[in-house]
Amino acid sequence: MPPVQPATLASFNSVLASLARSGRPAQALRTFRDMLARGVRPDHFTLPPVLRSCTLTGAAGLAATSHALAVKLGAQENLFVASALVLCYAGLSNLPDARRLFDGMRERDAVLWTSMLSAYAQGGKPEEALRFFGGMVAAGAELDAVVMVSLLLACGQLGWRHHGRSVHAFCIRRFIGTPLSLGNALVDMYVKCGDFAFAERVFAEMPRRDVISWSALILGHGLNGRSDVALGLFDRMAAEGIQPNSVTFLGALSACAHSGMVDRAYAIFEAMKRRGIQPELKHYSCMADALGRAGRVVEAVKFMEEMPFEPDEAMLGAVLAACRVHGEIEAAEWVSKRLMDMCPVKSGYYMSLANIYSDSGRYTDAERIRGFMKEVKVNKLPGYSSVELSIDRFHVSRNRV
Image 1 (cartoon, rainbow, N blue to C red):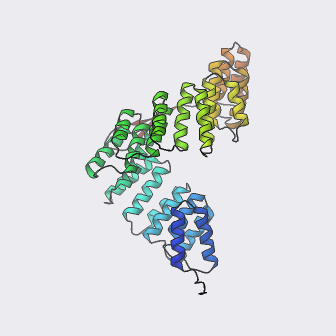
Image 2: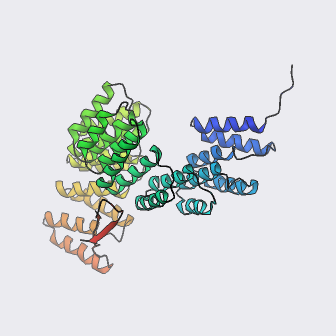
Image 3: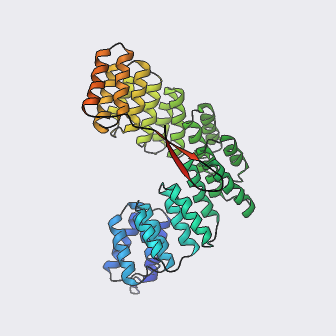
């Protein structure tokens, strides 16, 4: 029997890359620790899959250790490693460190620029993403389909339809055909900007569609109260053999909630669990909203009490609104107490309960709530709006209303 050959750096790098790509990040990190325990010295090919796995598992401590190791090995200036570090910190919601890394690089390639742009877009910083894109253009960085996807994501988050259409026009001129990821980004952008006609046009013209394409449309229609369209798409998707994911089910449940279709919502909720997709808080929120809108407020409160999550502000707020519509005072008191404990400085919840009391003729209780607001110095907050001022420059104006 031949002797067992010792594991080499090349073999470890190959295994790490394979595990990170195949959705087994925890196993990749265990392999990395085993590699270090055996005294195998990593190189710049080792660190990117390790950093990606840190992001997927939320291992911020190991990410910092890997960064320190990159500095020790002199690999931080490697563009491949630097891009992985930027994406890692961004994925761990640490955009300041990601930007410091980017700014500290003496040399920047298209991948590094794109990584930082994606970090801003995916990190919920659309204005920063668009400003960063301006610097990217000035630096002469390559503008490929990945860059366009990030730009479209930023435009969708801001609701900047004109800018999104400009990006769309650039894509038509620049690229032959529409890659699947770009088509999905276009559908998502138009949906978020409320332009469903263009979203459906892009969707219809896509040479290939996947679950993300369908889910973007279904969720958009569902959240905007176009229940018949959303549920029709949901049924068409099933007929075409596309397996729904958690986002698809969220769109279908949102459609049921907006139309008060409680029985259909329960059926979809149970179908989701049968497919092995674990419902998240947002799916439970849709169920509670559906019950509330249908007037089954007491059932909605019981549903929240029995679910495996603590209800969040959005869920409780939706049920409180339903309490007022349907005159459920006891449920309103229970929900309001939870909201006031959760957000004691938000005036809206106090006012909602006071209005519910007034609607039912309990004016003394309504005045008691208003007096309590003055006592604890809870004031009505001003509102703000975001306005797209022009097509040729990126700017946001927020105005008090």
